[in-house]
Amino acid sequence: MLNINELHDIFETIHHLFDVQPTAEITLEANPDDITKERLLIWQRFGINRLSIGIQSFNNDYLEYMNRIHTSEMAMKCVQESQSVGITDISIDLIYGVNPNHRKKPKRKPKNPPPMFKEAEMHRIWEKDLATAFKLNVPHVSSYCLTIEEDTVFGSWQKNNLIPEADDRFASKQFNTLRDEMLSHGFEQYEISNFARGQKYARHNTSYWLGEPYLGVGPSAHSFDGASRQFNVSNNAAYLKSLDEHVVPFQREVLTPENRFNELLMTGLRTIWGVAIEQLKATGISIPDEFYQTIKTFEKQDKLTLENEVLKLTDKGKFFADGIAAELFV
Image 1 (tube, one colour):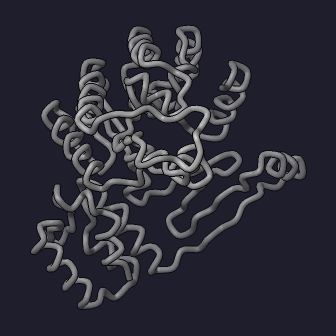
Image 2 (image 1 turned 30 degrees about the vertical axis):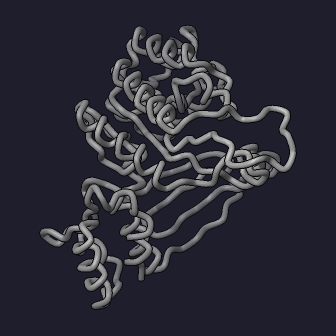
């Protein structure tokens, strides 16, 4: 959505204020309908060397259902065009757990009713989405389970019984298919929802999971310095008005030792590196006996391992990550 002049101002300011490493990963997030050959060449001029593309699905019925304006053909073309100009470090987003079926007779007939699919057909669509991603030879895939927010079209459909509520069994099967297919095609599940080949981990996102500091710039952007979290006002007009007065409008939350302990636990468990007990102790928290007793319970359930004082989720435990972390919170 940024034009050449806006990109120029942003990157000129970045290079003026910071020393940018020659090997820096510079990612631009885009939708397939935003990507053209002309824009790709412009982006390259500013040093953008990685793209994160919101594809979601390669099935046109699913894309229409999810209110996406691009088509499967556009999704494939934008990846191929990016690769043709030399941007090969590409991540694509895919969504699983999409179940657009009617559950029962709706309270009222919608203007655009969602399509109907049999479960076997939905699994085939998911398998085909993955096969297409492998065929495109992208080194990184981020895949998330569809979640339905209340104040959305999906939320309205669900409220009127047009689509079923979340089905953990269905989503679990697709998650297992995702993991199995990714691993069989040489991808590493380095974070629960993220897969990379050739260690092409997303450096920016990895910093979140490993608890490293980061700086966010602009309306609603978040920053973290290791001890506190800062978030800018999300209202664009209010943000600009404050800047005119030479003030960055933000709120800050100073993290307690308990906050840091729980965050390290929650984010670290999501990764292949896990979380070291020493990291948790470094927050200043005295770890209670109940903590280790809970670990033993999850070990017996084959959901968690504690080896060399490092906690890691098992394959079985990855689908229950949030619940496991919550049980271990102090």
